[in-house]
Amino acid sequence: MAAAAFNLALINPSTFILPKSPNPTKLRVCTLRCSSATANAVPGLSERPWKTSDARLVLEDGSIWRAKSFGATGTQVGEVVFNTSLTGYQEILTDPSYAGQFVLMTNPHIGNTGVNFDDEESKQCFLGGLVIRSISISTSNWRCAETLGDYLAERNIMGIYDVDTRAITRRLRQDGSLVGVLSTEESKTDEELLEMSRSWDIVGVDLISDVSCKEPYEWVDKTNSEWEFNYSGRDGEAFHVVAYDFGIKHNILRRLASHGCKITVVPSTWPASEILKRKPDGVLFSNGPGDPSAVPYAVETVKEILGKVPVFGICMGHQLLGQALGGKTFKMKFGHHGGNHPVRNLRSGHVEISAQNHNYAVDPASLPEGVEVTHVNLNDGSCAGLAYPAQNIMSLQYHPEASPGPRDSDYAFGEFIKLMKKVKVNA
Image (tube, rainbow, N blue to C red):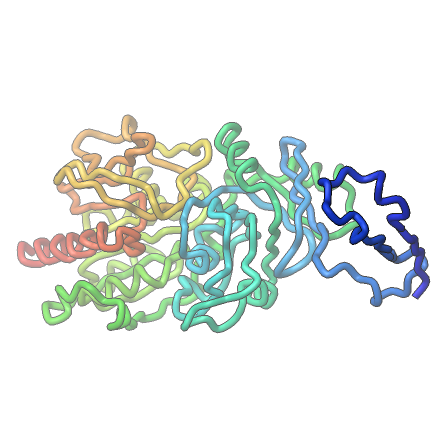
């Protein structure tokens, strides 16, 4: 290998400032020989032992963030949101509600527990990309099946690391959620990527259709006995619940099953008339991605069902219920994404630590008389729960099945059971 070398000889030690020595004759002259590869080095023999920046995140505000890639390669556009969860990155990756978005994790160290196939919230990853500060170089968990990088690459999901996630988070908090472009393609200029970010919009786009199931199916799996903490309802009366899949998470279905429900899952476009023919004890409107105003067909479905059977809305389902009742929804500045959001139950006065993932909220001032706001987010005072006793309606803006508390919000499924039981008794 061609190399340039230089010799550095300490020929005159007296030129160095040294402490006085009682025996100066013991000072030695040393020679340091260094070499560095030249531009003509043979490829592969002098590669750097560390990964260099090979990816860019270009935001619509014009900022460009250099980073290192992992997972899949290519170019992808999406809305950048930040998530404040300390754990649970695998549940986040497989949450259909993140469709069309890049998730930036504020926790700086991600990937140390690897991934397993028990914690997935759906059958695939729907988010556009993952943005993190530091990726773990090793995994340490008894359930680990593979590394985070391999998991994303197999599912064609892009990821970047070694980027200043704190600075980006502050920008998102100040300016609101921003559209961005992730790219590992050197052939694309910064200007081209910026134009892509400015010509794409997530508002008004129906994202539910791409994440919903295509045919009805029965769900039977309960929460694994190792993780179960609430056995109420297992030996009681079974209730038939039809769950609309707007991007439903598996753990919502597991919790319903663990509370003794027989569950039928239907696509987002399934006619309300077909649901009512089944004579279910209750209907659940699930979580899902995007703008509730972009799916008027879903709002109409909800309207047709209200008042006929007890209903429970979660996240997107909560927003659709708000619109169906005559209320309005609005896009939040940067939304709620994380497992540490405090919510006050206005009926009991209790405070729950909740998991949340939404960019839209219901405007309580737009709701008709008789609709009760039952929960409030303590960070910003936004509506986190509704009830309309006259039509046997209940809803939550957050995820009771996630329970990062860890059991703070699971009672909501029990309340839904009680609501169905009350209606059945009085029928």
